[in-house]
Length: 247
Image 1 (cartoon, rainbow, N blue to C red):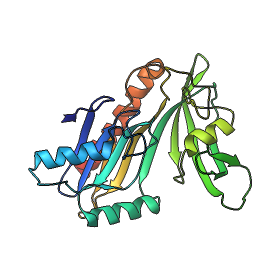
Image 2: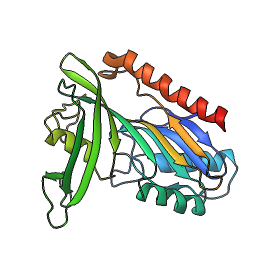
Image 3: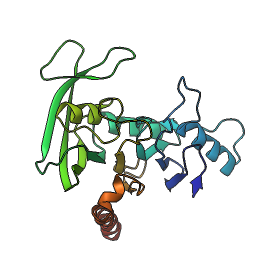
């Protein structure tokens, strides 16, 4: 199932009475903002209202976000109880989230980036090397998969969930994300190469594991790593199928 949006199709990955998972297109806001543009949450609420013939506005809980320019897997709650339980999972970092990023540097060395982030209203995130008043600890692991033509495809695993942390920390480490016009060297017409590839949660009522995966669109610069992304996608899908068989 796919839903139209001004920034491309929204693909539905999973749906039941408690959970809705979908793929956010790049540049579509996760929720309404000052721009007044269409947003993921409102479009999915409209989808539920129409599909299930619900009068008025259907309930849908936002339990996590992706930056506007970033695309990939998102999960939403269809009941308030599910929203509370999913929010607890994200707050406790018990979900498993994997991002893909194309870095503007060739590197084969895995990195564990640990910094402190601070931000003033309306400004970009600042990265600090030591604690400071108001600064929040941020850590992630960035694992290079392949290098090609001055770029690196890296798998990023978050250990904390801070605003802009993947973008800001990689830039601070000297390997900004391709196309990032805030923290990197992005220029008009470039689309940031950061994608929420996979997400695993515990179902809020059955407690079964739900593993969700979607590869990025094969546009520049992702297409330069097509084989590696296809292999990674197949590995995720095999893992999901094996878990279903065991269950």
